Amino acid sequence: MASMSITERPKRGVPEGLWVRCPSCKATVFKKDVEANLNVCPECDHHFYTSARDRIRQLLDDASFEEWDTDLAPVDALGFVDRIPYAQRIAEEQAKTGMTDAAVTGKGFIRGRPVVLGITDFAFMAGSMGSVVGEKLTRAVERATAQRLPVIFVSGSGGGARMQEGILSLMQMAKVSAALARHDSAGGLYVCVLTNPTMGGVAASWALQGDITLAEPKAMIGFAGARTIANTIRLELPDGFQTSEFLLAHGFVDRIVHRRDLRTEVARLIDYCDMK
Ligand SMILES: [Zn+2]
Image (tube, rainbow, N blue to C red):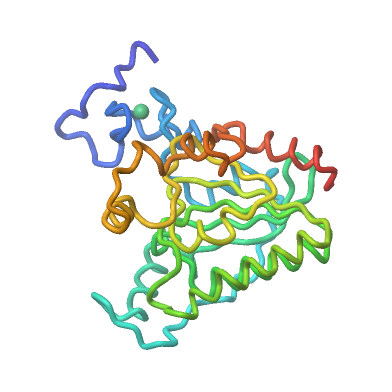
């Protein structure tokens, strides 16, 4: 590594996309090195965005994932138009991400332990929860309850509830929560992993309802944005109050786990809770 000065600024003529600038330590690092390091900065451990597909590879045993409900796709039930019509936005997001909506759910194995896994991906409309995300997560929980499997959800939802689906997106908060409550009553385990960012209606429902709440380092986690809160309550807010570290210190997060340790940590928790 020392011979290759990866912190050097890219030279002119270097193809774009080969290098990435770390927003935390400002180093310019070779993108391949970041990718080989689970999308974590090799210089300072900053956790970059990771897609749902990559997370499945990082968390589950090789080729063990069986995806569920791939046929569920969003519709523009309200005829909603913001900057562009919602129907057009859906089509663009689908083309951009190759996903039908922001959640991927299914069954797989973590170090040999069967689990139900659900992941929301920031790349698709900021990971916001509309009807499809809510329905997929709800079905995943219900199947986990029926099959007596642990639920592992990973939130990459910075968008909260999806405003383009109005009340239909808000009711997903109650729907997923009700399924998780039934899972809990049946003695099921639910571990939630909070990643950067987890905000709004997702933080206000399933993301903070885990029996155990893990978070990646320095993830932004909260309900409303800092400026909105400051304007509402007219008080000065503590520095970094919407971070994993602050929430750990104040009891909202149980443990901060480096991405490279997540698989082992979740497997250990499953064993500890005897939910094999
Ligand atoms: Zn860095």
